[in-house]
Length: 198
Image 1 (cartoon, rainbow, N blue to C red):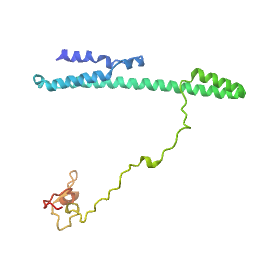
Image 2: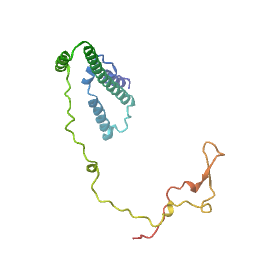
Image 3: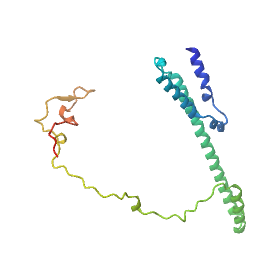
Image 4: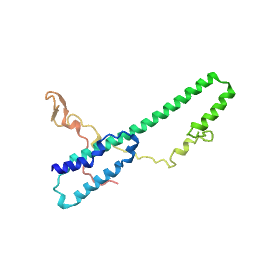
């Protein structure tokens, strides 16, 4: 039993160790480990000889904890890249503002052209060619169906009068002196056997 636990610990140990280079987390295939674990569970479930084998919650917990940590580090890496991009954009904007104060219009145009060709990795999207669509195109084109009205409310939906209710009172479970109501106040559905009417 101790050997099995040590084997589990060594199998998923790398998932729990922090990776200092966040880019290396993308080399860890979390989905493959989870699928492998699910396949082993299916094999245990289908094999009659292993039916009495207990589910190893420690292994499942270790796998889930490790994959969650790796996923969290991946999210942290993406956040770090996004923040670096934001800092670069802010820095470039502040440089442009300083240049606006010190340069003439001709010099600014030359600086903008040179800076865009060097550092701008994004292509602008032209939204001028977009045409607004009509609201009617989103509405389903089906004929309206008239609903049939019920000539009479079913008995199961009508409220009972006081003389129809049984005198069984319901009290709160926490406070035995608090009256909630009568038993028949809380009937949701009542079934009736009737002849088939067409």
